[in-house]
Image 1 (cartoon, helix red, strand yellow):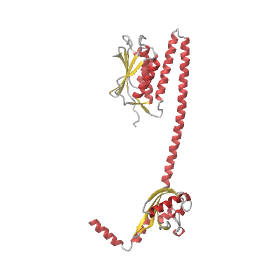
Image 2 (cartoon, helix red, strand yellow):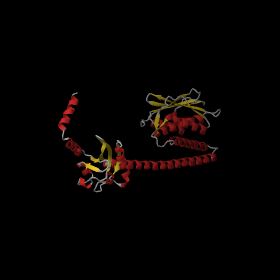
Image 3 (cartoon, one colour):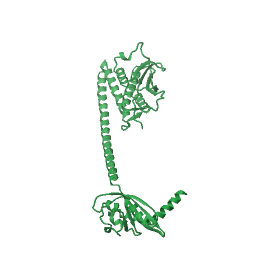
Image 4 (cartoon, one colour):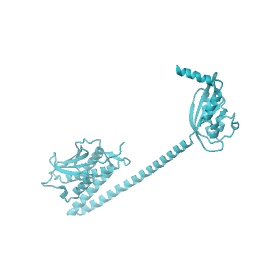
Length: 356
C-alpha cells in the first residue's frame, strides 16, 4: 500500500513534465537511442547517439528512413525489424554500420514497439556499440583457428613420424633376424634373436601408445589388455588378464611406455624359460596397493632356481625391468606363482595425470 502511494506521489510530481523527464532519461543513456515513426523514419535521436554515430546535427538525418543510414547489405534485416515491431514484436540482432564519418562500428540493436492509446504509434530502437567485443571475439576466433591449424599440421607430422618409426622398427627387426639365421648354430644367433624379439616388443608398445596420440593419458586396463593380446600372438603363448581391481586407473603416456616395457620383458622371459614341453601360459594381474600399483606376472613354467636374485642376473631383459621399475620409484619382487611356475611383481608409484 505504501509503495502504491509513493508511485501516485511521483506521478503527481511529474505531471506536466513527463516529456522533459523522458528526454533527460534518453539523453543520459550511453546507447544510441532512436524513435521511428510507423514508416520507419527517424523522428528522434538522443545526444549520445549522435555522438556515437558522429552526426553533428539531427537535422542531417531527420525524417530519413532508418535503413538508409546503414550499409545496403543490412537493409532487409532492418526492414524486417521495423515490420516485426509494427506487429508488436521485439527484434534483437548484431550488425555492422560505420559512423557518419566512416569509422567502422558494430552494434547490438534492439527494435521494440511503442504502444499508444490507439495501438503502436512509434518504434524504439537502441543501438549499443560492441565494436571492441566483436573485435575481441574475432581475434579469439582467429587464434582458435590458428591453433586448430597448428594442431592439424602437428597431427600430420606425428603421423608421418609414427609411420617412419614403424618402418625403422621393421627394418631393424628384419636385419637382426637375417643375421640370426646366419648364426643359428652359435651363441650370437640366440642373442640376435633375443634382440629382434625385444625390438618387436618395443614396436608393439609404440603401436599401443599411438592408438590415440592426442590423449595426455590412457586407461591402463585397455592398454595392458591389448599389449597382452599382441604378446600372446607374437610369442605363440597363452597370455591372459587376471585379477584387475585397478580397472579404472589411467596413466600418463610416458609411464605407460615404461609399464609396457616391464610387462613385455617379464612375459617374454616367462615364455622363453617355459621349458618348451607345453604351451606357455602367462597371467597378468593389476591391483592397487595403498598409493602404489601392483603388476603381477605369473607363469606355468618350471619356476625360479634356488637363490634366484634379479639384480645378479646378466640377462638384458631383467636389467631392463629393474631399470624401468626404479625409474618409476618402485620395486621388483619374485617368488612362486599359483600356476606352478615363476611369479614377478612390480610395485610402482603411478604418476598423477590431468583430470578430465
